[in-house]
Image (tube, rainbow, N blue to C red):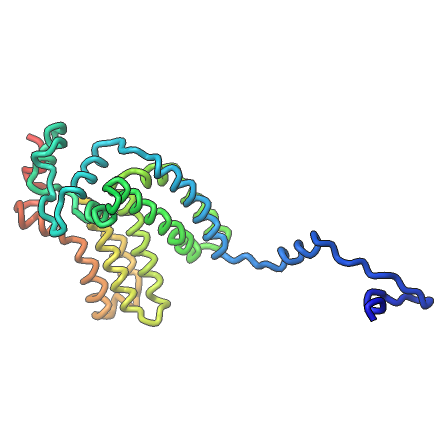
Length: 278
């Protein structure tokens, strides 16, 4: 029976033995049967560029004054935000700008506070953990946003350009505020667009507003980009006519102006004399 199964009958009553398939042929057939999806592409890019970014990040030293300031603030501020100042420190003595002698540091405390939360192995490692997480988060965000406005090829190009951008890699390795601000604005935009297709849209709308608020609380000038969530909402004909959507999105996003209100109440001006050199 085995002999009959391994033979193919031909005309004239003759039969030839069937050659067993080669291992290489079987493997190629299996590979050809694998269907690559956009998810595979995103995972491959995240793993590849994430590894390169991580290897560069762990060797990155503190190179400028801003990094030293944010690390100092994260280490010396309390969990209740008191002590959020560089007044009287070595940085205050070394730097001539008046804002380093102010009773409250001029930038919002969100980024130093996140570094403090992650500083289980020291402030520098906490800052690197935060930057690594933000970098890895930015990759699928860029791909997903580009996929909404282009095809798979366009989204793939956008992802690779973003992942390989030299400026992104430089800012992502430094303890600066621009990189977290950018990634959080990307996340807020993605959440807002995603809310339209989710079963609980107002929940996602509120999350988008909170993330936009977090983006505005990363640095003193970040609320100037509040036009991004405002334009997204006003361009939506359905939501701009709904008072509940106004309340959910506008109420949560307005939290991003909290630091401006605090500075205004504390000093009476958004440009107080304590922040300006004589």
